[in-house]
Length: 489
Image (cartoon, one colour):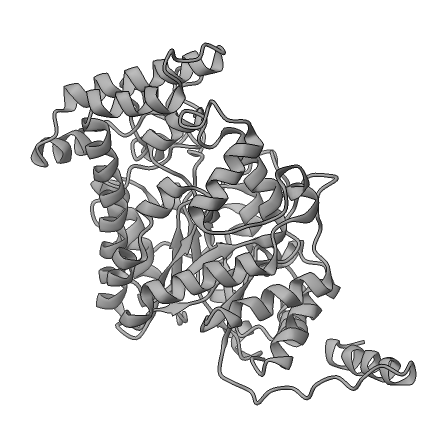
């Protein structure tokens, strides 16, 4: 039974039971309704059926495939699949990659027979009225046994090459920029795409140390948190007037501060005073943080220029990590007033169902070096007050998730932040993003509430997230029903 006929049957049963007549759908508006998807399913025999299903159920008119990834879940294969490597599921055209050290073999994904998934999906999607936007989400795990990739990753304060999350490729590394800019230009010039989105789900070395997060490090056990001190970052720091030696000393003291916390040894004057004293003694830490953030924004501006040089009509936009909605530090750094200067659209991740468990986890450890004297429940309350929202009590967050009000508030904040620049806002809502056992799960009514909240917040479009292959049919249908009721599909 189709999503449309199922909705008609439900309406009829409501009338028979004496319930009120559903409101007539609003007049249809042209709206971006997008769907991210793993590439494995696009390489398979059911491509046409899948495209038809997402179009009919959800009103989808744009596809955001994870077209370049070295991570199994984005490629759509089981975790720890033997021999998995990943890479570019399109065809690398080497003339666009300039000074990148990566070879064709470094870039091209060997899975699925090495077919060009992007070339395959674009004409198939066009038959369903769907445009294709490659979605490149930065890999936080360096491909094993690929030395050309390793040299693109950050260097920690101890001089060691990092190998993965929460660190990653260095955004000031000119070879990484040459590769990523090449991907943008290659897709724009070689394929009939609708646009492109890029994102990176990680914070700076400073915030990673402060939160107590560890990272894999090549040739070392643990560590790798305080980044980046590669030759390019050190050169940029010196040019900005930052004392690199003092900066390294400050990071080592910050590492010691967090080691003491993990050992349960509270600073004499408390955690916040201890943290603030570190900044007073080593103001270079804040300067280095600013350098790291500027590096990310400079990279985004460069990618935007590469897209416009290749095809000025194609939009280039950014995935905004959900942690930005939890962390006052990252909210300050991911400033829409800055981002709008080099954006055509933004996609804030406003995953309200899984937000409860994620925020609970963040309150336990995300700012341990600042709020170490508070319980997780009090930390959550302080952050909520600081960030201007209110949700369920801490001990119920995982079981309830966040409300649709969170979706509306974060959408409106993005809209107000970029609207004067003509930048589109397409929030990503939560449809069956995996959560641990015993936590809140999506429901059709909850999905409909999130869809309505996006447009109540003033969004121009919506991205049904995080991945088609995770979604239950009834919840995708609920999103489509809400969009049709709003005249958006």
